[in-house]
Length: 56
Image (tube, rainbow, N blue to C red; front, top):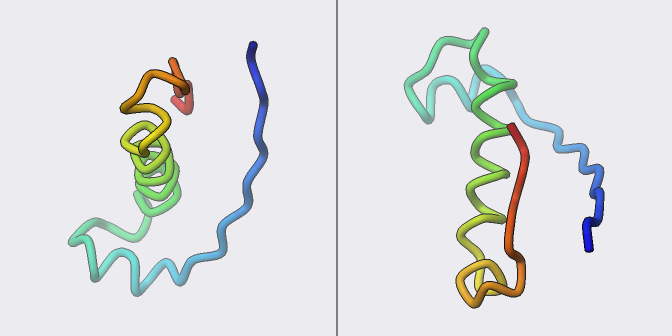
């Protein structure tokens, strides 16, 4: 079964860029990647309960 989840995350782009050492213009893509990896690395994904995370 596929479940679409919409998530809005508010970040401070200057702080994010500084924390992760990336250009400010790359923050949006980096946050999306970070959230996607967080879900892909969670327990249900490790146990193959979540079988695919397509965020890209």
